[in-house]
Length: 178
Figure 1 (tube, one colour):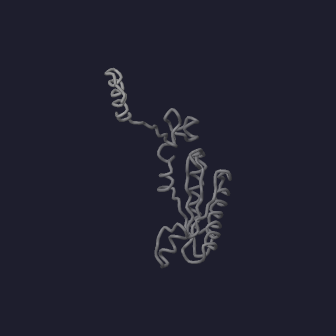
Figure 2 (cartoon, one colour):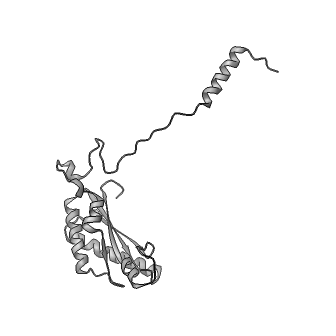
Figure 3 (tube, rainbow, N blue to C red):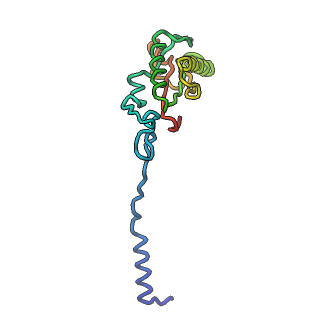
């Protein structure tokens, strides 16, 4: 058996007691993807000295400009209503050059997965072509097709199908995962 000396035993107990203390909380700084190192907005207009305000946000784009256009069944042709929405999108994107766009193409649940992926891609491509024709730089607009995989509405009637035949433009600040 080991004979413990009082100072060694006390040191051991103090060491064990120190280890039993909870670690101090770890703090983590989360960077706002829309802010620069100084805390200001990371929009090109702001960097040039202008103040863009609330209209320079994805929320404004979605809610005020409009991010969704609808299509007729099995069609990729843009309706006059779709062209009106896309003209507003192009104007916003041309004004807010610190943003990129991903156009997501969607289809209704009827038809095969392959057919609907191709249809969604053609719809997204039609929107992309329109935006580019309106002056948006081609390197700022990408396309992605979800086909029938991400419906807005789930039911088997024309009202649902009509909401799922769409293209959605998603904007994000340049350098923020776009």
